[in-house]
Length: 300
Length: 285
Image 1 (tube, rainbow over the protein chains, first blue to last red):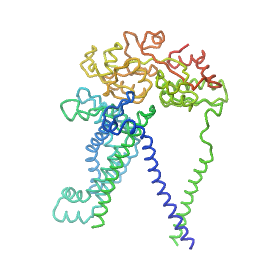
Image 2: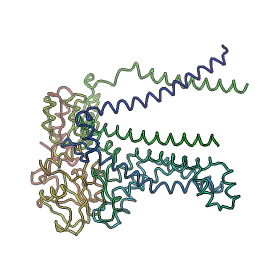
Image 3: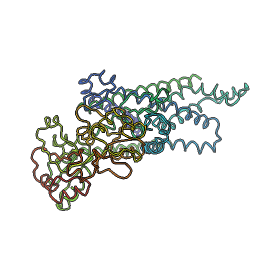
Image 4: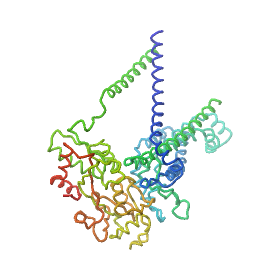
């Protein structure tokens, strides 16, 4: 065997080893989180943890349903606010903006991804929370789902915008030309041809954003109020739901882990297991959708 | 030709990475696990309550200048961590800013408790709140959610926004013990923040809010509320007229000896207690 072949083989094995190591790390983290949580699952019961809303470690009550609802609600709010913005950004960058404008806007949007989450939290706490408090509803403290959703929407914007932009760019030029040749306007082309063709890539971007939103911790702790309650409307108007305080799964762990011992500590690891599971489901669905998109591209 | 050059470059860089990884693991494997605190008499380790931590750091600094060669390490973690650290002897001294629970004493019967200072807990409100005096009972009803409007306390017709520390905090545990009692629970709808500083920021920026704070964190940005007409000041806490006062504890596993004993003696000496007063706490001697 020549030296070249040996080098080739060596590289192959080193790369293989790196891939194996990253898999081992993921499995090890999953294994240890689960192992630490076993005490809580067995001593309290799965139902007591997953389907109870009362979390009072002092009274040995460890229901995390309120936190699950909190995490899902704030993520839903962030998607509601962030997706139209991110999609607008992506369409503008991919199909409308001249390249000079692109070269300014794209780095600016990407810069949002580089801001540390504690800075978003501080901004939310000092600027957004007082603004939200101006909404005149009894019991509105400013801290809650609305402020948290706005902060989170901005945080997931770069993720969604960049994946969606790639998806839109991946739509073959022929489609656009064909549509324009048939007499469709640019707007019609974008909404009727480009977006449907890039749909699965855009959806994958949104799901990646959901994963990011579920995992966000520091900024959420600072603006969401951290009360362990299932969020509900403050008045007759159902929109005041978003003025309610809440706590996220991530926040529950971060706020209490410093002090937790025994079953309490184990219950926080159980919270981590639930979060891990949720994010795994979200990422797996993003992956399967992206795979679907690749398949379609190949078929074309 | 070009591709061979490239692959050589690749191999070299990968080997470099591999060497780096090997070097990293090599340095970590032969090294003994982090120094055992009890093995070296010249090191004293403390961990626990974040309320006691700044005071302990100051005391440690003063004691180290008197005893050159001695190293005192102070870590945070919270009161529960402090009890556990002393009970399991992972630290020489544990710190707790609340009474030690009976369940903890049952788990760690060897614990020796040293009260090194006392700390008052003040009830604070947003500066624009007109109410300036409450009874302990009213405070309990506010935090349990029984009283929800300032008009019931002689203020404006506005909802009370309650802020509290998170479960497990020593300040919260002390507040629950001294104000809430056995039956009343802090309302689940209270805003929770994870530190005294965050509580102060929340109260100072949120109109109609109320919370409790360690004396050490009081300043002009929040309004201190008197309890039964007694203002939350150090003299009032020292003479016993202010009712919400908690002990700051240091814990050891069994009778302290050597430098640990010397450090505790120093804290309870006149010089040590002077530092306690300087930090805004109430001396025990």
